[in-house]
Length: 74
Image 1 (cartoon, rainbow, N blue to C red):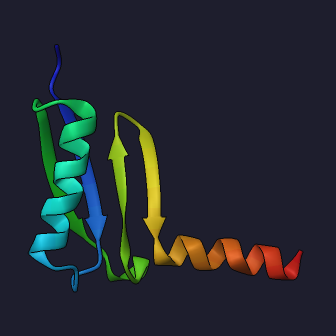
Image 2 (tube, one colour; image 1 turned 135 degrees about the vertical axis):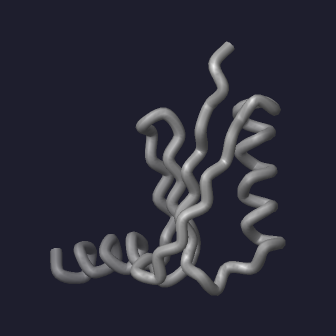
Image 3 (cartoon, rainbow, N blue to C red; image 1 turned 30 degrees about the horizontal axis):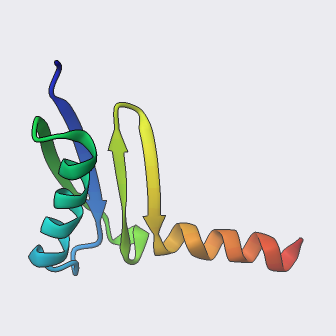
């Protein structure tokens, strides 16, 4: 079983505690053999983006704002 790499991008202001909870959630989902890489990017404003084997989970605030803008502008 290959170890999965999870790349988690957060804004710099995310607490270590919140980051650990995100990692914990992915460990439960993927099993213990997951390796985590942490990237900070203040462009996402808040929330996080996680990439696992090419699958992207975008829960960033910037992404949510873009979705709302599309809905408003039609």
